[in-house]
Image 1 (tube, rainbow over the protein chains, first blue to last red):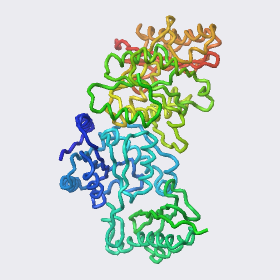
Image 2 (image 1 turned 90 degrees about the vertical axis):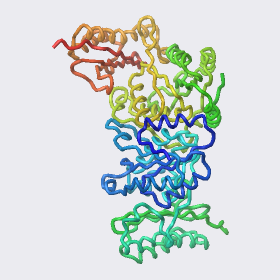
Image 3 (image 1 turned 45 degrees about the vertical axis):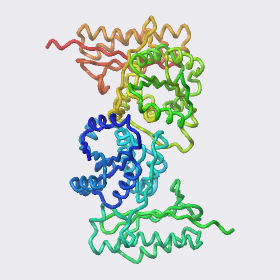
Image 4 (image 1 turned 90 degrees about the horizontal axis):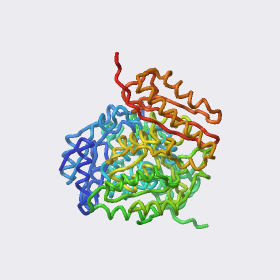
Length: 286
Length: 286
């Protein structure tokens, strides 16, 4: 496995790939790799000639009050995991080269970023779309792998790819979960044993919502109230949102139908957790 | 010469170029091709294996009160000129495919776009940087040719390329001028015979500024007052700005030194004209 830190070296590496056949797969990450990331890498490894992973804790996607400073960094472990997973190239640029002092370009997707995560974290998605655009310019992949766990991010990146006319395919990979359903996340390591149990309630609420829909209940308030009962049973879980939305544009629904997504965000102590569930609702009987 | 209108066909054309050697040169235009554009195309033709020209009147870079509707369109003449100049591929997407109804991505360069053209045309440069990003994603050129005539645009695109880590070289080509010095522009065709004479004063004023600097005058106000005398002699020429700036960041200077740029914008009747001159000032004697 090759490790590249500088933009210039990545450019010359990429130019050498031009004449070779077969797709380049790309998994962008912020490091602190876990089973969720590894599932993306394995998926890329199965299909692509070349697998590129980037490890970059992107300052642009953290708000001023967020956890950039204490976001977990574990480059040596990440490198080992990538090597073991058969990654061809690990790209890990230093922040001061990636965003030099006169850096002044922002890539922004508008409508899709207004609600939910975008409302709570107003500059988050423009940080994501800017770094993703830079990484696409550098790696020029044919296939890109994102997890469903950050569903809104997946939709935003999908919009970005279409709007900017990138010639690449975005692959959405299923959320990897712990045995109790908790979605695997780099921030889970901050949960105390007690909080860890509470954190499991979010995915439990989502499953309850999914089951309720599949049983034929169509009224969103009724579905939400069943989900909230699960989360409300615990005073240490603070609900941020629990939204039932059109799975394409994330507009909130009042009646479910077709494929919907349930988006959830909670705080357990100081730890923010998000999760989601795609549900194919039964056809209306009327 | 091949002509492609759709994004999908451009993607598949581009994929076929991967295995071939030699640079792809790209000249993005809004059509209404004139000698300025042709000089860019000739320059690309000399150096590149493949020369791509795009013709697209980009609605995003026009303000609501600007001349999008009556901007000159002459596709048949443009196609003929491209063919005669040895262009390999002419890309002319229809606006409704290039910006579909749910389009929502904007690429913005901040500091460099605040002053001068950016102040008078607040959404102009984000229109330029968005369309240029899309075109780069599609064409993936090795060399890109822009005219010096739109000097601020050239600097903004240069910043965009560096910030987004595009692996390509931006070539700045000299402004093509009429015999009296007027910079060639698609909008010149709107000038009446009388206005045409007045329009020549802008480049005359710039030359006066350059000569004044080269003669050793360093005080910007003194230089500006000499230039304004030329423009002020005519009541039908309305000055928008005449700025003497650092040639890298376009900050206005009070004393000249090193390489500076004089940026000028005037209105002759309803026609807006811009021009500029790069001047290498003599070293300070003190």
